[in-house]
Length: 600
Image 1: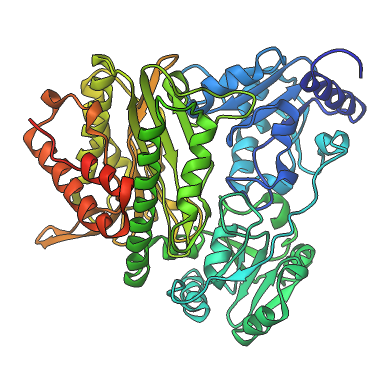
Image 2: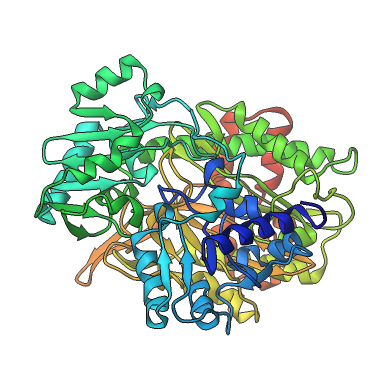
């Protein structure tokens, strides 16, 4: 098609197909049949069509409109990426900005047809769309996907191998996991349980893979019965030895494309446990005769509570990760001013440092290295086409993590480059105060993360600032870096399943962002541990797991209370004590320099 940008050409091709099929609006979700956060290339249709690479977003296309809804983490990035494409950025979560379904209900005529692929739409989201559109008699076409008709070079399914999470790092047996899930099924009165979420399946069967970037999971579905377990996966991904071990544990391996037919065989009146947030309406349509029991996947809660053996491995993984970061930051400080350093080079060097540590597998997400104004975009990612050189004065934000056989890490640090001004010091310090406040929290067991969120925000609010993302997310055990059911966020839905419980690992990452200038975020991972038991019940506290110095050169000490300084000095003493045996040379010197007590 002559003329126009590639995005404009693709939008026009989509509209041509929509016109022929009498489709009034097409919705492209950031989703796949497993409702994953990170998508295999085959399901990155929203990105292919719009050019926007952020992990979250919903694209709506009509004959005369194209809009992309994304949250505050990506507002700045989306505005830059979509400029000149004809796609309008809709700032999801901002006041007076309707959601995509609300927008369609307000702008389409009664009786219109909206295409939303049912195979990537969760059962819960489907109901929300119906609630908005049905009163206007707008119909959802779940079996229509105009995008697939124009995406001629759409990638195939990923072909990574499936492997066993090895001992001693796998601290629960398949049998134990299956027994725990079956016990939860029995409590719900369900004979069957359906799983599509990849981290739940990987945890349940003690298996890992590499079908999804950064997350050690593999494409699969599972159907669990009272005494049967069926794993639907590409048969070529599992070797004979692993197949025999699975079969000995009562797990039958069946082709990936047989998941739907298996559901269709469930008889009238049989009760099927499904998670409406983690199951698509498309796949569930096959289970036409079974009675649905809707609840959180039991594995979500079970795997969120790490046992003592897992916690021990996580602590050792944190030591290895901290040692790698000492090597990286020692290199960074010596290289600044003596060689050209880009945001891309930081990603390369931090991954190299981790790759030299024991039991490292891969990064746990794409490294965010963001200098000055780029740091104001919480999920900014440098690309070969667009990145900054680290030179001059300012703040450098680095958010990175690693997958180790014994745990998953996620850490953010901000370091000074050249001169740091007073305003930057104030922002850095109030964020640090928020992070310390949550680190020191003591609270009743089961407290919702939404209730804890304000603890970290208070110092930032008191400075007259705010940040748009949550304060913390759950973290897996050599699994997804973003894990439920818990989170520490004012937007999180409060349910009996989302309370903070002993053994949960959560991030602690308040921030402050000034668009066009700089961003600050300081992040540690924290573990919920017993604090005390009184006549009022059991109380929990947080153990900080992450081991890496917090740069004191950016602090304005006059804004810190004595107890906050004491917490920071004690944290640095622990970091120094645990990491010194693992580093030498420049990394050791850097560690000693950056863990000195903060002078008042």
